[in-house]
Image (tube, rainbow, N blue to C red; front, side, top):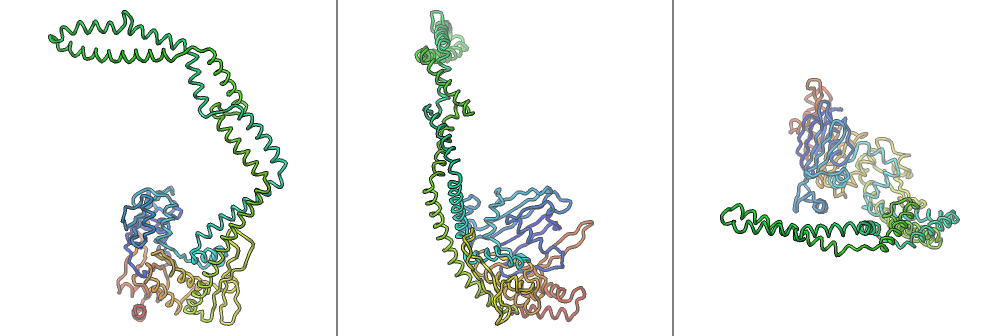
Length: 553
């Protein structure tokens, strides 16, 4: 669950620190006071796109952070531990985001740099936000299908169907290309095959060019190398070489080292020089033994290098890249052979079609089962929202194979008892659509594992006794989840177990938004304001007090 939220220099919020409670919390305030700012901040912490306009005027950057208790989410704990973002046994998760005045942002999870993709993946397991315009999207088939699949727990199966459809489509395209461009494929295959055979005759080996270069360089300078090694050996070990001179020096200093300490030190250094000279002498002997003047081998290497260079120029690559070019031609040749194998391509189409069909039929079964359950529970909930006798139904008419499966998803409603079922966007008014949307959201939220649910003015378009029913439904939902609702309705606000009020005021030339937690007397005043407007009377306060008392029963 969400434990705390901190904002600094965000939109019109200078500084805000909120501690969240369990149960049902309502957030109220005048229109334009900044109620949605809190939700916008949470959206950014969950991976929404940042914008420079979200930085408070005059500030260099906006800072947002949230703290979550994830002790009840073992799968998320394991995921974070594997990514190195949580210590073993850790139960708290902090998310932080900084947005500068240019709109660039930096994100952190438990004080470690994170990507927006990571924020979204983690955030989707922490908070589910139902926006105030959610009911408008219900008129779109894609939104209806997405909601049903989420309720069915079929997201993984949906992704699989989409991928398998793409595989089937790719196989059909390959077959179509082969059938319609067989002559061009054959010509191209001949050309690539000739190039492959030409290069393959060279018996190319990886690293050959580098090895040839080194060996050729040594052979080409063999005489110079041998002469240099012999001359250095003579200078070191000859009759009047450095070793003999070194011996004379050691002999002169050795007899007097007991008299002059610096002679002893010098003798130690001469011993080191003697060892180094011995090492050099050994190297020279090794070079002399290995270097061989071989004109025949040198000529053969020059022939091979010329052959490789000529072929490299022909294929416009570097000589050392010829083996890679040969492998590339081989892969291309294999692809062209496959592209011309009509029987194999037809078999691939049949196989990928069967894989798609099996997965799509499994998804269809999951949708049918979920559709019946979601429709029945939504219908039951609608009866409490002044839609007695109304029926909600999910039709799944078949359609040609598509990335989303083998059926369309169509929400239907009969607004009155005995009325025929018709598509949702054809029969529901704005108020009815809002109530149907809320019913679906409440029903689906009962089955979600996400600990925190946020409803942003989803009660728009309803009022009176219906609003009270909505408030009670959200309060009941708060028994299983942490629920936060932004509302303008006093009936909903009265049902909250916790109540926050948003208000804004001017500081100099700037407007600042603040949130405060209301006690019982503060709640009475706020609900009275929501009931009666600017002028609050004793009667209005009494009515507000009665609403709070009834909601608490």
